[in-house]
Amino acid sequence: MTKIQLMKEFDSIWYHYKTHFIVGILVIAALVPLVFFDKDQKTSALNVTVIGNTIGQKEQQSLQREASSKILKADSKSEIKLNFWQLNGQITSSANVDLFQKLLAQITAKNIDIIPIDKNDFLLLSQQKAFIKLDSIKKLNNDKTSNKYGIDITGNEILRNAGYDTENKMMAILSNTEREETAIKFVQWITNEYP
Image (tube, rainbow, N blue to C red; front, side, top):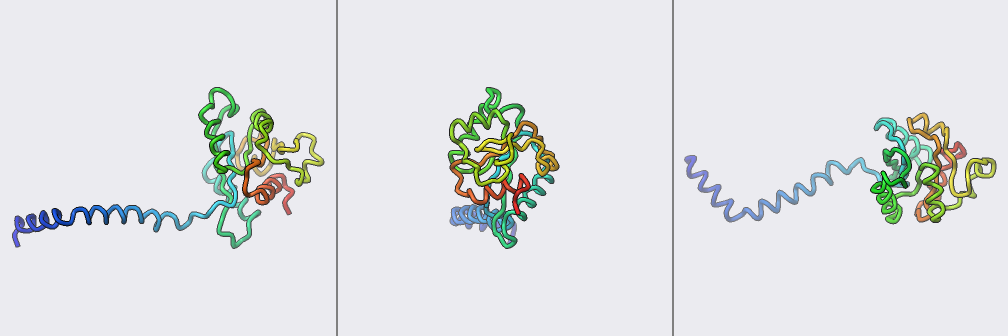
């Protein structure tokens, strides 16, 4: 077969089967990420959105692994996911309107269970009844700097050692969480009260 005959045959096949080829390529392209990239993804047992300064990727992963290993069972098929939002100042300031709207949308969609947040932002959100009461956490009974909806994490050793600026920060569990038990365990772990 000559080169010209091969080209004519290819053109004929392409003309009659191009739709099949295109659909096949699209199906393969859709399946590749599912087969190769989703194997290590675990479902979320808890979503913690950390607002403030960001920390390095290595420290984020280390903190996430440590939290998951301390709070979840060893054979758990899920993990605690930490999402860091870098922010200067308060999230409720006019300079951060877009990020505040994103936060409200994430809260409404129940994509966030716990947030460490600036004290002033915490007070504003707690007035809107965004957080659950933390009466079940022993630290609240002895800690005068916390209130019944959040825990003061200023100087928190676990977060500070990871590189997070804990100065003037509160941690709270969102009132619409569907993972309250795990969220309470996480807050207890952060405050060194989890067994």
